[in-house]
Length: 118
Image (cartoon, rainbow, N blue to C red; front, side):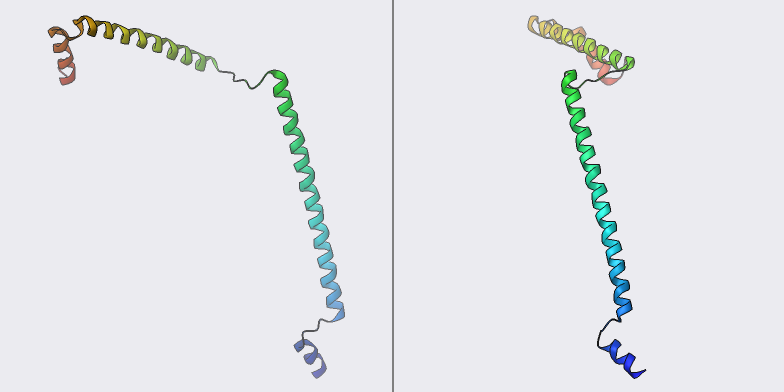
């Protein structure tokens, strides 16, 4: 009994326990190596797929965006409204140049709208 306590207090590991630890360590190292290999294989596969996609896009002539019918209609309406806005701005500039923009009736209507009376 005294002999077993002295071995434990000196930090010595029994031979059978050392073998158990060594086997567990070897198993864990094997698992880690297998995991590293799987990750490397997946990384290589992903890189190859990405490069293939890039080549395909270059062959197709670049990136493309397909709009839905509603999105196309919105884009057309926006472009048309921009054109109408540009025309209206030009009309107002012409009216400011010839002095018709600031006549009494027009200023009165603008004031009524600002005050919420119309």
